[in-house]
Every structure is written in C-alpha cells, then in structure tokens.
Image 1 (cartoon, one colour):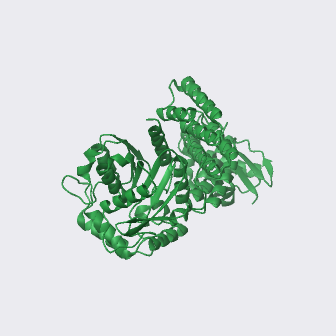
Image 2 (cartoon, one colour):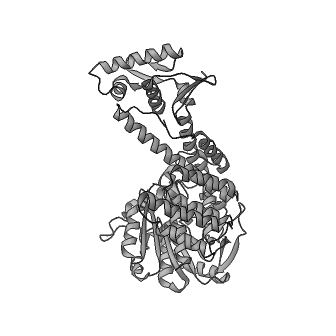
Image 3 (cartoon, one colour):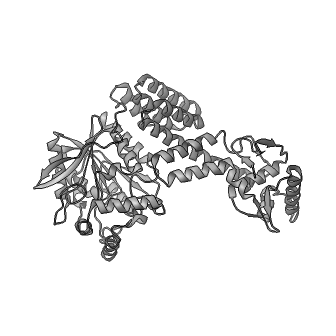
Length: 534
C-alpha cells in the first residue's frame, strides 16, 4: 500500500504520491490518533474522544458512519476494524511521518556508532516541517485537544533536543556553518529557550565571531524582557562577560585520535595518563572503580563526552595504579595512594593548581586530596559519588554490609561479561553492541582479583570527617534515579559542604556519558566559566 499519512503540519493523506481529499475533520482526527497509538483502540474510547456530547450508543454509531464514509470516499482500506476495536492499517502507521520521526529518535538514543546515529537525527530533523497537527482543531472535543497539545509538546521537545545534538556534533567536527544553522533552527522553535541562546553564543565565539555572539546575547536580553519581563540568567551573563573579555576558548578540542599515553613513577609504580585540550584551567578526571585510557576513545558516546571536556579546559585523565594501562599491584589502592599518584602527574607536568572532577568511586579521592592539599585545588566537581559505602546508624542510605558483599560477588562472578550493566547504565542494558563493549572494557581494565581489591578498599572508606575542611567552590551533580549510587549520597554531601552547589539531574544511568549528557556538560561549563572570572 503506497498510502502515507502526514501529521507534521495540517494532516493530509497521500496515495501514490498524490494528495487524497479528506474533508471529514473527525476522520482526520481518528487517523491521527490511531497512527500515534499504533495499536487497536476500543470503539467506546474513540466514541467518547471524538463525540463526547453524544448520548450513550450514539457515539459508536457516529464512529461507524465516519468509518463507512471514509471507506466510500477514499476507496482504500485505511482502517482495520472488529466489532469492538479500530486500528489504522499497519502499513499506514509505519509510513506516518511522525511515527518515523519518533522511531529515528529512539534508535539514535539506543545505538552506536555515532556517525550512523547522527545521520538518523538529520533524517528526523528533515521530517519535522511544522508542529504536530498545526492549524487543525476540534474545539468541541476537549480530550482530543488536550491529547493533541500534549503530543505536540513532546514532539517539539524531542525535535529541540535533536537539533541541539546535531549542532554540538557539527561543532565537534569544526563545521560551524551547520552547527549555527541547527542552533538557529532550535531557537526558532522556542525563542525563549535560554540554553539555546547560550549555545549560539558559544558557537559564534568558537567560530571566531565574538561580535556575533554578543549580538545573540542582546537579542536574548530583549526577548526575555519583552515576553517575560525578566533578565537573562547569571550563567548567560557570565558567558557574555567571558566572550566580551576575549578569554573564551576557541574551538580547540582533541581530535578523534587520542593523545599519546605518558607515564610517571609514583612509589615505584608506573601510572599512565593523558593530557589534552586547552584553556586557562586544568581539569583532572578521577575515574570510577575501573578505567582504561584507550577505551575512553573506543566508545563513541564516551569519546564525545571526553572531547567536550576539551572544549572547556586542559584535561588530565589517568588510570589508577592497578588498573587500565598502569602497573598492576598486589594490594588494594586507597584514596591516599591515588592522591599521591595524581600529585606526581601534576608535578611532572608543572601544573600547580587544578579543578578536580571526582566520578563515582573517584569521589572520595577527590575529597581527600581537596581536604589535605587545598593549595593544589582551585575547585571541586563531584558526580554520582559518596562519602562512604556502608550503612551506619548516622548514615542510613549506605549499603548494608551483606548486600554490599553480595553485589561485589555478583560483579566478580560475571566478570568478562557485561557485569552489572543494568545498574551502571540501564539505558544500555538491552543494547547488544554496548553490552559487548562494556564486557571488553572490563576485561581490559582489570582482573577480577583487582576489582575485588578496589571494592574492599571502598568498603572501609569514610571521608565524612574531611567534608567540613573543604572551603573551595564545589559543584555536586547526581542523577535522581541513579541505580548504582543512590541520590541520597549526593544530597548528604551537599548538606555537609558549606560551599557546595547542588544539582539534581533527571535519569537513572550512573555512567556520566550515557543518556542525556547536555545538562551535565552545561552545568560543568557554567561552573568553569564562573571560576575563570572569579
């Protein structure tokens, strides 16, 4: 069947490339609703939706007459009906522009490689020619109007996120003409969306056009005041000052090829690290329980995230002693060991002060180093981390010891496979390619014995006494539904640290580079920008 239904803009049908006249407004509404449902819907529900004022039984009769008139008018089997349900023909559902759009977005969010998924986003963006059912109304059907508005807003949000990702991907490839076009289209979608004004400002600055970036700020300020009676956010003002002062970093990011691995000797152990990116600040990434410098650039989402950090600062990433490309050891490395290794790296590179980014199990090390060597730490960022692992009467959100031991045992037993991916990245748990990558990454990063040592060390860690000693600017990020490190751990840190900015993010994934990372990168970028001007 070469029948297509178009729901972006005013709804219409095509057959064989030619438009079909369809004058029945409720027939169009019926087709749209069933296309979005993608399954049979009960006749009673449809009658109540489209003929809400009809007495009992008459709504079903009106539905029956509408189906009959559509069949007679079109001469095509547009619907599949039973005595109790109605569905749109499966071939029509599959060819509906909105259904294809949603499918492309879903495939993008759940599969690598990056080039393929960006192509899907570009295809999806080409389908969105106007808002959902633009210009079509059924004012007498309030439930349908509410449904239409809800779907329209969901599609607009999905489209906006796609345009933002396309702009960022184009910028990462130094195609600033395309990046600016995508960002401008995003702004056209919602002129009051301040993050997009910020994105446009960054893109113009990175492309070497600071005057254009400042014009975007002026337009943002005028629009917000005219439409909402408010001024731009502090983060937008900070970005304007950064660009106006001429210190905003240009588009100097790591290439797709990683920089060379370097080694430093600490306590007789060779510790592997990489240094990349540019900027007035140095950002040190303290990894979670395992890492491997090569697999940072071996997985598209992780590589893009690491490259994005290179937009913001000079970046140091390293493998702790015992894991990744660093020397293996026969004991459990503590936060004190890792802190010494990091200081050895900084001394070897003549780096005096840094911003620490402590991720997951790397958080206690970041806290330890900040509290004990404050002269080397400008600021602190914590993501998805904790002060201690085990539960105590005054720390009730910790893990009960028996549950902790059982989870570690389950991780060890499944080592070599995609161990505990359901906890670390539920958004990836059903994706075969990503499961295979995680299994390989674990095998490269450490042996089961090493991992057991890492978690034995974490079991005894308690950095709570250090928290009151930390007085540098601190940003704490935590996803609300984190399945590996529950959000209560992050909330505790925020309460105990006097200079902490607490940001609770949506999502369930523990890994920072999985899922929607735009908020993480935005908050980190704004935080670093504030440090440059403090």
